[in-house]
Structure formats: structure tokens, C-alpha cells
Length: 570
Image (cartoon, rainbow, N blue to C red; front, side):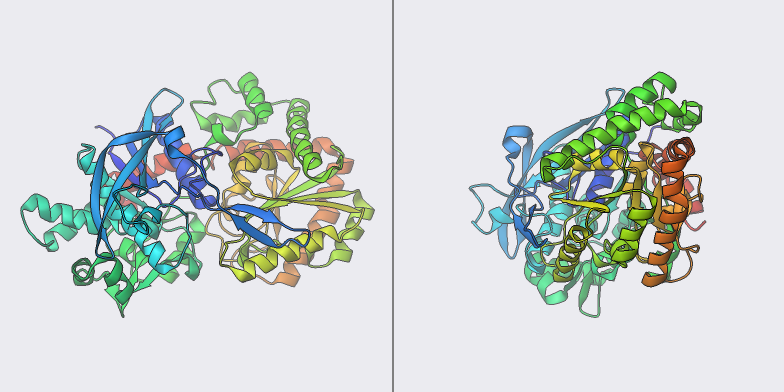
């Protein structure tokens, strides 16, 4: 039986470090999904926007205050223009849309095309040329216009390019949920009807899969109905209203995805339970995220795996045999990765950090619930640990959303706290965190720190990248770490329970106690025992939390219609 044909829609997709079409984890996950599809030779097509000015380039002053600059790039210099253009109406104006094609080539030579929609055309009004400039920029009107372009424009561009109907339309978060409107109109057109009917709704629902990524209410886009009518047009809003897409005067994009999808999933087992509480009455499954191994394994570990794990580039599950790698060789590979990271530190700070000093990494979006400040809860305790147990080095990175004032204040607080720690604890905060820096940071530290407030971490993937490179995690028991954590084997927990709400003071104490009494003594006094934890992280976490496994689960549970109907509630 042939594999289902899948059209994958996402507002952001991380294609390359030098193509700024992503903001963070959602886009990286989308890129890793499409790379895994290419490796597996699956018939996928990706759809997103071109984001000519990117998300933003981050600059931090001496006090950690963030400013944002456009991250301009030229798609015409990097990509090929697709041979089709389509029209849609936004705010009552005719808007012409083209697409740029990016090709993802898999390990076996298969190709997944990604189409990036673009309105910067001379035929468009000046304001309409800007719709595809900024990722997550502007106000609600701008965001809704972009989501209309992604969903409605995406469906039309695929049809104009000659693609047949897909078996599955996968919505990666609610930003792409307006594709259901495009599909409704398409089904009605095929029937020769001027307006979608209930039979069209069922056909669309049978074709759609929806992945929700956040248990944080602010992460779910909701637009007032009058704004939606102004941007989309009254007729389109009436269609959505007639199918329950507008409730209490609000167009809820997550609600639209939930109503029009036959399969809905969260991105970890824990997130499934949280999502079921957020969206009662909906059947929600769990497919835990994974990362694309070849993208995130550092060069020293690639060479290590090539020597000891033949076939790992095709079959990621072979990483479980990392338990056979000699500890001395694994340590040597990590030392090489660490030296690369410390070279970056020297470029930024002008100071030479010591490779033998225990180095902790933290790189996340600077949202309040991710609590980048947890390790600085008691600065004197942290300094004391550095004096007693051996020096510490902290490497931090991450952007705050331009409109999130509290996140910007948190970022500045972290920078000030880190720089005040003195000689016992060295600190650096890297600007402009992206794919390239992430590769070096996740591979080069000795411990990955993850401190989200429970239960607000849907999954998280940075710790998975670290595990591939023999870096264990210290984290609160939320998201993927509920599944990946094995105390003292793959890493360590902050707190002892996943099902109790977070207590910042208690979790800070747990963090300090684990560092002082378990982790640092192991690293400094029994280095080969610490190396065993490194090896376990690769063999137990790396061999499971990868995109190949994740995508095979999507094929089995979500894309295969017969199976998804039976298994989505399990």
C-alpha cells in the first residue's frame, strides 16, 4: 500500500541557519519533520511563508536590554521561483501570491519540496507587499492576514502547481487552521456548488490532522469576529460560522483545527493529558516530538558513530548500541565539541574558559514559564557551590518576543544576575540564538538545564539535541523529560514529581542540591561514571527521541485513516 501523500502547513519552518524562516522550537520541529520525511522517502510537501525580514536579529546592551533588527534575506538569491501565481482577497483587495521552492534532500536521495509564499510583487498594493515580511510581527490584523495567506494561499498554490489532492493535510499548530476554509471551498468547487455543505465538512475533516504544541493560552491565536470579517470578508466568515468555527464573537484558530480534524495530538504524553483538560470533549492523542539526528549531531559524534554504529545514518534506532562505545572515545568526542563551543565563548567575551570546568547550558525562548532565572534564585548558594565543588561555567541564550515586555525584563534580569556571580561562576549570554549556535551549544556543554514551570512545557526538544551529543539533562519533570528521565542514568530531575504544580523556591533548592551533592562530585571525582551517564543519554534518549521515530508514529497513528480512528483515544 503506498504511503499517504501529506501536505504539511506551518507558519515557521527551520530550513537552514542562514534562512531566517523560523523563530524557535515550533519551526525547528517543522524542519526536522520534513527532513525526516525526506530521509524516509515519504511523499511530503511543506508550505509556509517566506518571511523576508525574518523573526528578528537580537542585540543586547550591557544591561541585557534587548533590541530587535530586521533579519533581511533575499529568497531570489537562494531559491527558485515556482511556476505559478494565485490570487486571494485580503481586506477587500486583490492580492497576488507567488511561491519560492526549497528542496530538502534526504539521506537516500529522496526530495521534499517546501513552498514559501510571498506577496512582495509590484502588482500588489504597497501594504499588501508587506504581508510576508515579518514572522510573528505586527498586530492582530497582520497576524490574521498572514494566517489567511498560509491556509488559503497555500491550498491555492498547491492546486495551481498541479499537485493532486493530498491524502492528509497536517496543520502544525493553529496558525495554519484557515486551510480548512480553503479545503471547504475546494470541495464545494469540485461538486459544482457555490457554497460548502455538510458533506464538504466531512470530507475536509477526514483529510485533516492537527498538532497542538502549547498548553499556554497566549499561544493560541484568537481573533474578534469583526476583525476576521474585515480581513477575510463577510462571506468567508459566514462559512466558518456556519460550521462552528466562530463562537461568542471570536474566531479561534485552535478551535478550528480541533473541529475540522479527524486526528488531534499533543506533543508528549504529559501534554496530551494537559490538552485534554484544556479542550474537553475532543479526543487527543500523544506523539512525542523528536529531533532530526543528522542535523543536530556534532561532527565529533558523527565520526564516533560512523566508527562504532554502522548504519546509524539510515536507522536512528541503532543509537541504542551506543552502550558499546568505549567511554574514553566518547569523552574525547565530547571534549572536541566543547572546545568548539569555548572558542565561541572566547570570541564573544575575550576570555579563555577552561575545558575542564563544568559547563551548564540553557537556551530557550525567554518566556516567563521557561524560568531562565531559576538557577539564579539564590546567587550566594550558587557561588558557594562553585567554591566547594569546583568552578562553574554557564552558557545562556534565547530571544524574548518583541512585544512581550515581561519576557524582556526576565532576559535582562538573567543577564544582570549572571554577570554578578563573580569568579566562582563564569557566565555568558549569547545574542541571536539560532540553528548554528544551537548545534554548538547543545553539543558542547556538560549538562543541559531545563526549568519550565509545570505543566506548561508541551514537549521541548533542546534536551533531545543535547542527548544525541552525550549531554545529560537536569530538568523539571514536564514535557518530554517525564518520558526521558531516569534518575542518575540519563540525567537528573529538579523536584521528584511530575504531577504536582511547580514551587519555585522548592525547585531551586532541588536544583542546587542535585548540583552540589550528585552531579558535580560525579563530574569532578568520578569522570568515567559521568561519562557513563553521557553514554546512556545517547543510547536511551537519543535512540528514541528522534524525528524518524516520531514521523513513523504519525504515519501509523495519524496518516493511516483506518488506524488513526482506532488509536487516537488510546
